[in-house]
Amino acid sequence: MASRFDGQLRWLHKVRLYPTCAQERALVTMLRVTRELYNALLMQRRDAWTTRRTGLSSRDQYAQLTELREAEPRFASVFRECEDAVLHRLDLAFAAFFRRLKRGETPGYPRFKPAARWNQLEFPHGDRALKLDIVQGRVRIPGAGAVRLRKGRTVPEFGRAFLVTKNGRWYAVFEAHRPPSPLPASGCSVGIDRGIRVLAALSDGSTIENVRPGSRRRAVVARHQRALDAATRKDAAGRLLNRHDRARMATARRLARAKEREANARREWLHQVSREIVLRFDRIALEALNLRGMTRSAKGTIEKPGTNVAQKTGLNRSLLDAAFGMLATLIREKAEYAARTVIDVDARYSSQTCAACEHVCKESREGPRFAGVRCGHAVDADVNAAQVILLRAESPPMRAPGTARGRQHDAA
Image 1 (cartoon, rainbow, N blue to C red):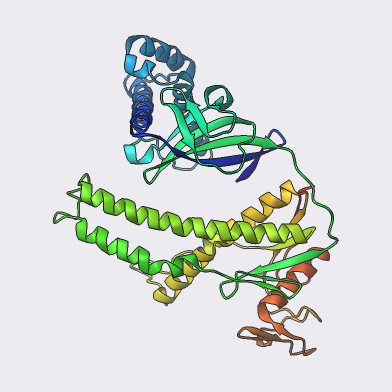
Image 2 (cartoon, rainbow, N blue to C red):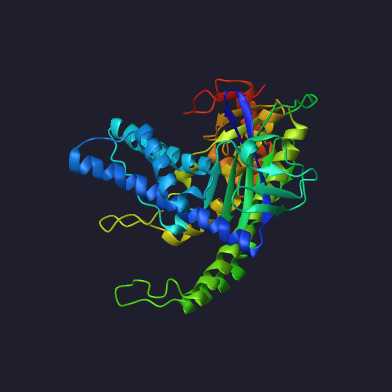
């Protein structure tokens, strides 16, 4: 994952950790203490406002945190920067609350965090707190000792770092800054049309397979879901009665890991696809899709129920399984690092427009094939749409009816 900060590319390098039982207990204790600290700081701010109509600043709470560490050994046992990060996280939550309030929205007040929603420890200066050995086989964590790492890619120089737990496993996430590494120019441009039948059709006539990881693993996930339903007990009102039952917790974890394997397979395939596209082309034209609107439920309301709800549900499931948004995000990230150019193009009527004569007619589309009614241009429908997208990216403003000029993002 990549993003920009102060004009530099930030990359998150994720590594699996293998703590011993004693080390895992220490990490869990650190999680519990930081969560209790967050809730206590939030309660202090809330009570100060509701009782005295005064606000507490982070500077005041920072000084009180120092006093708390001197009085309570339990809080003093946690690395100080982790607790400072908790205070900063609370500041961000209140800043978002007031920002949305100023825009006239109705935001939710910052909420207390349950254990299920508190799964990471932040080290703002991770390079000072987390120390890797020479061979990068272990990382020394304050309060937990030297924890074994999974061998893999070399961990680069990093700044901020996180320790994250997910489905019973621990990971270290290092935030590294890397300068762009431009690839040699290929002199080629491509338009990409994303779909369900094929994940992506390229304007050069090639297509990329949609591996459908969700569909392939649906039987396994459904089996774990049935096992979880069998292990769950609820009262007449539908409230869960055995939330902390060990058998049910183990079943829920197996279901979560099955979903995690599905997501990992999807992400791995999209990384391979996006990397191949960035290696081959200098300019990449993507259709600008409103994915939120495309996957909106058709159920409707009681007064105005929707139509074809089951069909739309299946379509939404297929769209989310293909992960159009993740593919576009990975292409942009890799293109920015490789100094490639990505262009967003309005894709309206692209499936009805002929790439040869630019005539727009819905009768030209015949299922998976496109046959232009004016010029007879015959090609795969998705490939034709990709060619239209490339034409619109190279010759704005676009000529299709109802379209607007594309937005260009130059990563160079």
